[in-house]
Image (tube, rainbow, N blue to C red; front, side, top):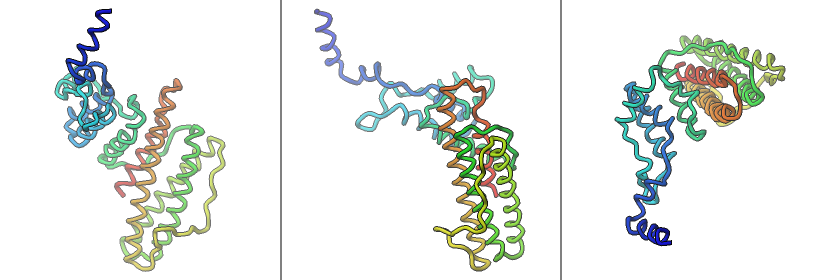
Amino acid sequence: MLIAAVLPAALLTAGCAPVIDYFGPRPDPTLIELAAQAQSQGNAEHADALWAEVARTCGFAEDGTSPGSCQVDRDAAVAEYSTKHAEPIDPLTAAVPVESRALIVSHAIDDAASAAPQLAEPDLMLTPAEIDQAKDLLAWEYETIWGLDTAKAFAAGDQEGRIGSLIADHEQIAAWLRGLLADAKAEAPAQAAAYTATDLPLPTDTASSADYVTQLNARTQERWTQAATIAGRDEATAAATTEATDATAWLRWLVGTAAWARTV
């Protein structure tokens, strides 16, 4: 009884901070390793973002500070990473919190875009969730092809050739998506003869044609990045409940295509 009475008094006397440090939240170990990896590779931008994610996912006190239990010795973490890992960690297969997948996928797209990516044919079989994504992306590609074809009618010189090249690329992506859906015995959406312009006004002359293509390319980047982010969350969840050896083939293709979209 004496011990039970004395312990709370001792805790109160010592203050809350030591108790929080001892019993408080702990930073995610995989995020720490990814941050240490980025730092050891000299990628300061990714490292800073990942260290911030380590702090964010661990949590903050009411005054906005990071609890002592969430503090990380970054130099020690980098040293431990270098000792522990002879090969780089693959961020897309790393067991990070689902809420952190958007950042991980964004970094993967950054890395892929820096390597002058080319479109690559997907070699995979779609899951039910991926089928729905593929249908949505195919519908987007159809609309993009129509928009580019409309812009081409007002283009001139080099711009006309560039748009023609973009149309060919998007037609290839659409063909691959149709092939994936056919392999999965899923019905592909039909390509409409025309589409209704929404918040992106259609071009009416050479100048507006160039601006339209720029904006359409930006939206293509956003669409494929969003698809990769959603796939990253879905596949992280699936990996926790299945024994699939590699559930990232679709995600990797989305990342590669999103990276390509950044460079055209």
